[in-house]
Amino acid sequence: DGGITQSPKYLFRKEGQNVTLSCEQNLNHDAMYWYRQDPGQGLRLIYYSQIVNDFQKGDIAEGYSVSREKKESFPLTVTSAQKNPTAFYLCASSIGRGLGYTFGSGTRLTVV
Amino acid sequence: GQSLEQPSEVTAVEGAIVQINCTYQTSGFYGLSWYQQHDGGAPTFLSYNALDGLEETGRFSSFLSRSDSYGYLLLQELQMKDSASYFCAVRDPTGANNLFFGTGTRLTVIP
Image (cartoon, rainbow over all chains, first blue to last red; front, top):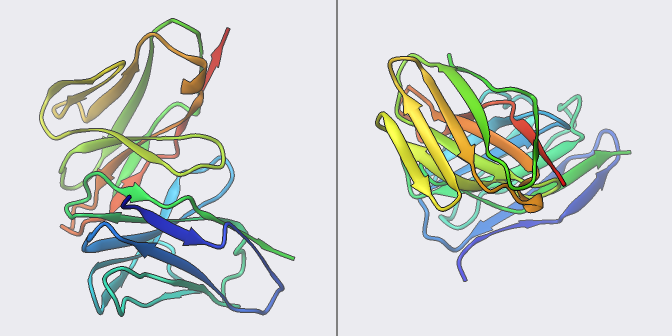
């Protein structure tokens, strides 16, 4: 079955460390996205990529980095520059035009 | 920029009908989407309205009025499993594919 796989489901990070969240899709979607969700809040866009080898900053890109070397993969690195990284991170993909996003099951990152 | 307003919480009785409203402001409109998210889970796509009127999908319907910059999600024959957060979303008016989400409405269905 096609879908999006995010790993790990839970991640603990020490302050000052970089961590990378994995996102893989087998839906053959061109566009991929990373969102951050804080408790009781909506989803805020971190980065998005409409095509391989291209990506754009979203509303809250500071302290994050991404790469899009393959169509199937869009990993997110949370760097030590991100001051408040504890959150639920959601990866999504779409065939285009912002319609019918498919989301992964998310990674819950906690800074300890 | 864009802004979306939804009620933060709604409570309804099992078997009843509930309406979740969404008003939006955006410099360019490309349709209104709705997503459902259970606690700790991934959002799932429910519906999309590009034109005025009502779209029906089983127990769920979504309505759009572009002249009023307003839409709503209607849930009928509520079930306990409908307890979740519901988000409306609009597409980035710059032409990119990304969606801008509202802060969500938490629906609690009570017996």
